[in-house]
Amino acid sequence: MEHNVQHQLQGLNLYLIGMMGAGKTTIAQVLARHLNYQFFDTDAIIEQLTHQSIAELFATLGEAGFRDLETRVLSELAPYTRLAIATGGGIVTRRENWSYLRHGLIIWLDVPLECLQTRLQHDTTRPLLSAADLTTRLPALLAQRRSLYAQADLQIELTGQEPPAQIASHILERIPTVLKTPAQPPNNGNGTGS
Ligand code: S3P
Image 1 (cartoon, rainbow, N blue to C red):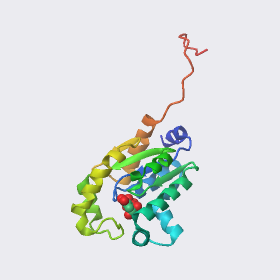
Image 2: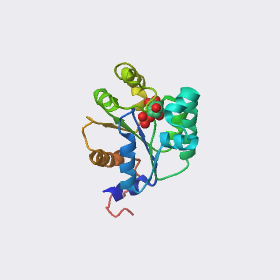
Image 3: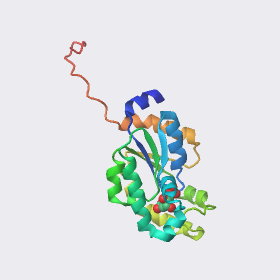
Image 4: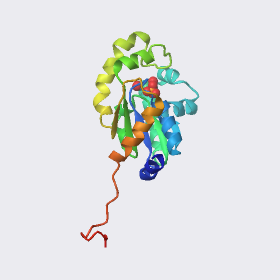
């Protein structure tokens, strides 16, 4: 099945979008393995390029400066093919980013708020979110972004309990339903196709 999807994708990049804690990195890694794609994570690339953590970048450059770097990284990945890319949760908030995301297939990992809150409870790496923000800021961010995430080609609704392998195979099953199929040769009605 995977080989078939791989063939149908013709190297089209996969972009995982969704909130912090949705599992984009893990799922992009699993998909990359299945499809023989290269895995990238925009946050990790930014940290490697700048030798600073995301939290430090938010502190030194502010969110706008961080978003500029994010857009630059996205633009530099777009020309390549056969990539599975985990993006930062806020990538959808800049209109310009969509022109790059549209180079590939956009997959939204739609995880319920309560599950994100549980997962992020002990996380210290996400600057937009202190522990106290989980009950105020996180729901507000999700409310602001939901309609943007919904612009994805594929919405993968999750309970938050599914193991990554199961999520990845579900995505692989759904991918053909949103790919444009090549035009069929005209059928002259005698069944020979000629
Ligand atoms: C952000 C999400 C983070 C990271 C930054 C901002 C956001 O990425 O890019 O902290 O605005 O939602 P993850 O979604 O990988 O946590």
